[in-house]
Image 1 (cartoon, one colour):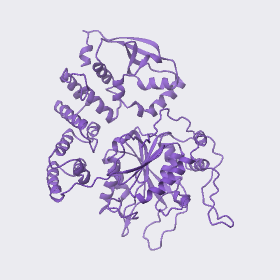
Image 2 (cartoon, rainbow, N blue to C red):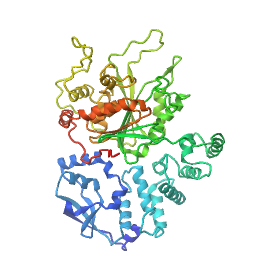
Image 3 (spheres, helix red, strand yellow):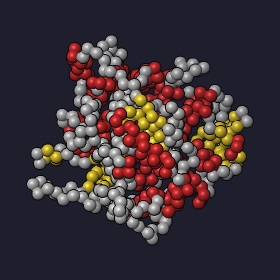
Image 4 (cartoon, helix red, strand yellow):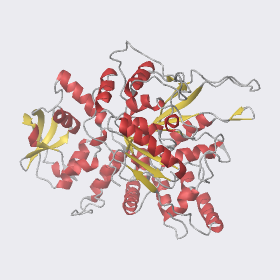
Length: 563
């Protein structure tokens, strides 16, 4: 271990303060693989603002090696300096003995012990410390010291045997796909090491595998605390008794362009591509027991119980967990379902299930319908004039760029107008899509109640589509602007007519969507094409300026749409 190598009697490591050219400083390639600096854009933006206002308040720590200064601590400050195109930065240079690349990486990890890290970064630290899958290294050299370091740094509840079991889990994950991001969950504290190891042993059985788990979800319910190990063993036997064939594999048909991609098929059987990482997921989920969109058995919304429905909805996000960035936000538009005068409690059930699966509950917002239809007289409850939009994050570091109206002299409500004289079509009197979005966002700035007429323009109105069940075009705009960085990627797991995709493209984001029914793909592709063709970078810049959204992140998160 590095701590052992660094001991030089009672002498401390010598340190000197210097001002160094930015061009002579580097981030170790090994360190870049461990820490997700590309997902720390909000922190970098904050540091840039601080440096511009107050200058450099704290030097970064480096060592001098092979003609370069390698960063030990302060990578985000270094990136902020580079983004500001500054030439010099203050550093503390530590004089330490020569060491191997692996030992240097160990040394940096030890300097990050007290830093807040994502579960994925913790996994990467453990992988390196135990030399798992690292070529040209001796995994057994100083292993006991490295295991003890992990016991100490991981904290309460971690013993030597737990670390060694985690090592087996990580080695298994490197060779096998993992449905439920096991090692991440272990290091996040949501499941125990013993539960994770039982999961692996269950999937190594001769009579059970990934395909069977995808269909039966026995182990998922084990993680949720619904089954114990004995129950799991019994259910696997029962499953194999009743099931003679594996579920049919669906080969997804993909439709893609430069800025968008559509995956046709069941979202639970066709997860997000591994090369796609999501900044914002925004969708209107199927409302429970209300609208039948087609005849597929995979259609969500017709489960036997509200609990089963909610579990399936959360599966959509949980099984794509690794494709969400730490800064990701999930927005879900939904409404309650009533049966025989009783509210089924879909909203609280969904919030509870999402938090049980490890997502952060940010808040509830509401879409207030100014022109909602009156409640029938025979209904024994107050009239419903709003729908819910629930917001969740993967971590507490979720992206949020608050709107600060620069010039709010002018506001307008978006309403459909009268039919033009001699014509059959309604006129909407909209001079610019971007002006309309700006006025709508100005009207609803930073409030948890969004006011928008129910009969405002919808995508299917403009392309003469018979599709029903979508929301107005403007509704996603506020969320896209505030919860997704410019050039980020938006995902709609229930795409429908493509409204979320169209607004995402119009606002300079990339889009990926899932749609169960092939009959809807032609319509939504027309809508997406419309959004792509309407994109105007100059108009988008005007919106950003007027809403105070002028500082976009410099790294391009654009989705690679190569088919």
